[in-house]
Image 1 (cartoon, rainbow, N blue to C red):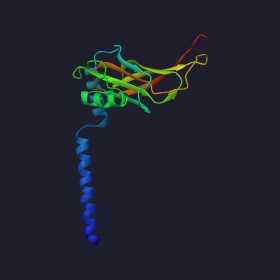
Image 2 (image 1 turned 90 degrees about the vertical axis):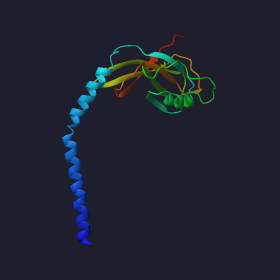
Image 3 (image 1 turned 180 degrees about the vertical axis):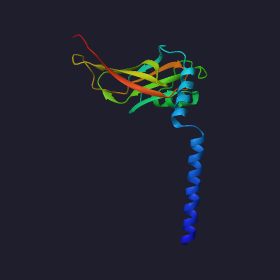
Image 4 (image 1 turned 120 degrees about the vertical axis):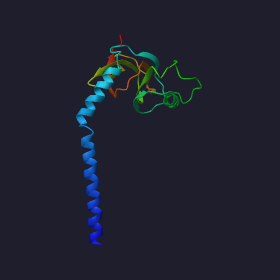
Length: 176
């Protein structure tokens, strides 16, 4: 019994050493990250272009916060069902997913006046920084007590770069 356990442990240890050696031979993690970052930067050549807003809706049906990039028509159809649970209308915009992708920013359920907007996309350190503006009613604004689920969808040029979402709150000051 003891010999069998030692044999099993030796086999496991040998397998792990072989796996670590294979990983070391394939290049360092930092090297792979740098290569992916360079590949990302080379494919995203539309720096500073403004997102094309396809949808800004206050009542989305998405109760929680959701920030995502949509790169296929199948994923878009699935997300559209979440956004528009009770409507029969088709998704907005004609999207060519070979050329473009969609940014979806849902803020979750809030009471009062809230809106969202995909404000900008730029390349930062090998990632796409996606700014989602959250428009909040200021203290002098008249607001409703209805619950809202604001969502914004925008079209941007397609990229393989990983996204990093940055929500930014902006207060709207109403003049009474």
